[in-house]
Amino acid sequence: EIVMTQSPATLSVSPGERATLSCTASQSLGSNLAWYQQRPGQAPRLLIYGASTRATGIPARFSGSGSGTEFTLTISSLQSEDFAVYYCQQYNNWPPYSFGQGTKLEIK
Amino acid sequence: EVQLLESGGGLVQPGGSLRLSCEASGFTFRSYAMSWVRQAPGKGLEWVSIISTSGTNTYYADSVKGRFTISRDQSRNTLDLQMNSLRAEDTAIYYCAKGSSPVIAANFFDYWGQGTLVTVSS
Image (cartoon, rainbow over all chains, first blue to last red; front, side):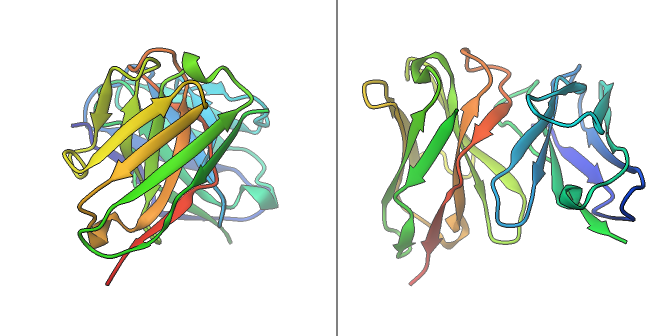
């Protein structure tokens, strides 16, 4: 089973600044990694798939990078609606389809 | 517009059973794998189960294997999760999620329902 580790657990950033979130896999995933955003009280929303492809309707300030075992989600110029919890998910080796434990992005 | 609407959640005693349903619309239901993902209160996301387009192939997380059964009804565009022998640790919001692929392998989840809350308590 692939274990996904996200860091940091909590990230405090000021609006307008850049946020960088990390996700590490216990085995190589190629580019089979997705990122999700979950706002309080809402369902998760797909942001990125294939490690770097934005999903439909996702603003360009969201970008993903990485391959193998190390991945990064970058949010440039944070907006108020971006403060949420972010999860990575691997879909290379399954079952199970494993998620990271999440990174909470909070307002500094 | 893709819509996934879950129902069937509620309060159930330990050892009891519950059946969740997800009504899908806005896409060709029979053409995509479908999944259930859950989230315990204040916790992260946990994948539960996935079913192939035909319903022939199913997979489960070890935590629910042998207790939960996923199924789909192509005529009604619905996805179901039969949950038996429920435990306190099954308490969670259960989300229905559309797979990205027509094959059961290598799916991310591009659309999610709003979830239904299952509480297992005496």
